[in-house]
Image (cartoon, rainbow, N blue to C red; front, top):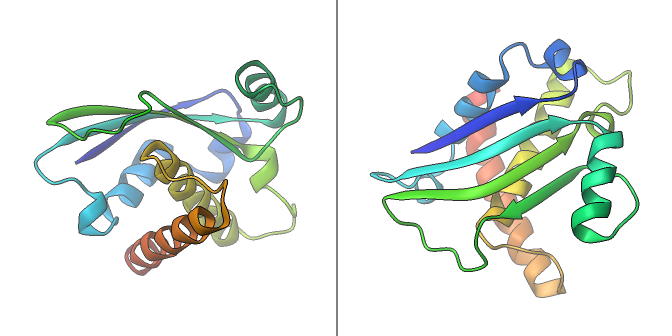
Length: 153
């Protein structure tokens, strides 16, 4: 089972996601079996943020002076899923996902789901530095997203 501890520092998130705890719980419950980790207590923290604050974090931790859509920080370099495992932290910028402003709520939520899955895979050790890793991660993202989309939308 995956537990997402959701925190928000950007008020605009509440306008789009009325109950963010429930929204991310539903996403995780819709994951394919191999990513649900049955009989395990897996947890992570999710900060719903904005461009200004994510830029500060990107500068402080990655030495990149720019905002980005998502940051993921794994707790440990080596991932060992045990009975109780804390994976790490994900931060998502509202400003990145709320473009274009004219998009409907469904499109916004689909973007959030996709980027959350992306960050989740980073916590599990996936990356996209090399081309082969990029395609492996993309394949897993699409696999999870299809599962989630069929159950949530």
